[in-house]
Image (cartoon, rainbow, N blue to C red; front, top):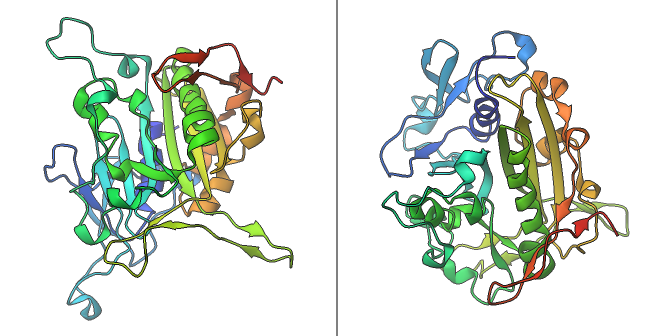
Amino acid sequence: MPSVTPMHLALFGAGALLGAGAAVVSSRRAATPPLSAPVPSSPAVGVPAPAPGTAKVIAQEGDLVQVGRPDVGSEVFRWGFPGPVPDILHRSSYITAYDRARRHPAWTAQHLTAANLARPPAGGGAPNADRKNSQFKEDADVPELFRAKLGEYFRSGYDRGHMVPAADAKASQVAMNETFLLTNIAPQVGQGFNRDYWAYLESFCRNLTNQFAHVYVFTVPLYLPKKQPDGKFVVSYPVLGDPTGPTPTISVPTHFAKIILTSRDESHSSLSLGAFVLPNLPIPDEVPLQTFAVPVEQVERASGLLLFNDTLKRGAKQLCRETKCDVVVRKFDEAGKMIVGPGVKGGRK
């Protein structure tokens, strides 16, 4: 295995190959360099280099290479480079690549450990993070023209669904607040999905830190075709807002994927990989999680992302053979009181 971490490999695949250029912003709103991307030590590693003319190597040191925007010196780009340009936004507990056309994340990436999921110890001087103190906000780091607007969600019939859940960002109130930025949000069906099965899957990812030292999670909104009566496949989805109006619309994904890579120790010599694709629809609690298991390559083809290199995908074990892929059903009333507790598992009717 290369000496870089699995998350570095993942970020190269999804970030460098998502589009021709990238606007990079840190959580402190300071100027940051483009994402550093590992260069394969040999062609067998399987991470494709950007196609000629689509990206420019602006710095190289050791095993790391920085990929920047294309060479815009060409006459055709005299008055500007059109893109596509994902906004790569670095937050305290995650990274997101924002899709300017659909106005929700193209992907989010997290590194979960038992330590970074824990609340800070009492007596540290700072109050514990509380989602009651967080509010959904438009993200000023995205240009106004492409910014998702809160008003489009109002009375839309869809929840503002977290790609990175607030429960994964307990380190500070700032970290939790950042999960409420609309660059981390996509429209999700509420009852039966965002408030239920999707939340169970988020909890499943967190619980993996009890068994694995490192858990890397990508969340990817998808637009998948559906077969029509005439045999043709069509991609059809709603949008929030009026496309003829002054504010941009927000696309509603047909599906959402969670891609999970786990490592048992610091050597990353024992990796497990799994991917789940869920429809953006109500899902009964008793449906087994493994119903939604798919090969990682299926998500990559559908999303246009290269999440991991071929060597990693060939060498990694199947996640559901290394751990029990069940979701635990927990339901709460409007006051936040649990009405169905642990012990009821999806997949066990």
